[in-house]
Length: 99
Image 1 (tube, rainbow, N blue to C red):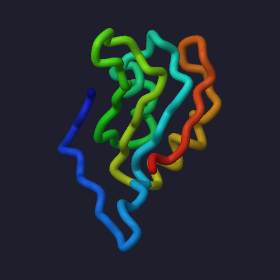
Image 2: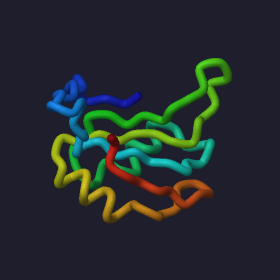
Image 3: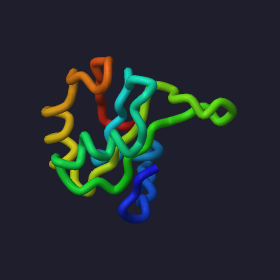
């Protein structure tokens, strides 16, 4: 995981945890993409707090999805608008805000 500062916890509202508008969920990732690659591809859109590829605990292989967390919702929106449906490695990625 690449982090630049401590990740803040989500606040709970009356109906449970709130959506974090600064966290992008990225799916359909190429198995060869690393957390460092994710950080490098997304850093031009704003200040990244963390970039992480989710991996199987036993095999350490990519699960094909990950998260990039920015400091502001505006940076998150800019990254989503620019990178959604782009090809990273050999696959076209799909993004949404993390819930």
